[in-house]
Length: 125
Image 1: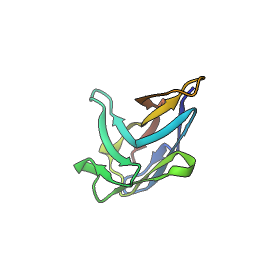
Image 2: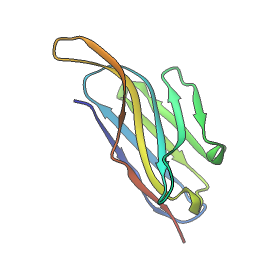
Image 3: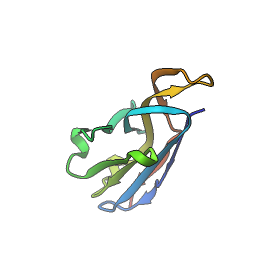
């Protein structure tokens, strides 16, 4: 069983900061990449930031210079530090991970993509 648990969302004023965390647990054999997407009301889900196991990162243009993604490979946890938040950053933020897993017989399957349930971020005065 694989589970992704996000935390750190909330209400913040424009210009403020939040730090999101996502811990992945379960029978992972390896995790290739972890990342964050977001979905605002009436809009499609979009990539926010992505980090591979070697540390290579990728950001949406709209968050470059304001958001920083990082990960702790030992804890299978990914973080998103969000600074200089804007009202347009308001959305549900979803953690995702791409990895291979072990079944009950020790066989490796995947890679598969897993998603968390999301955490609400609201930027408003």
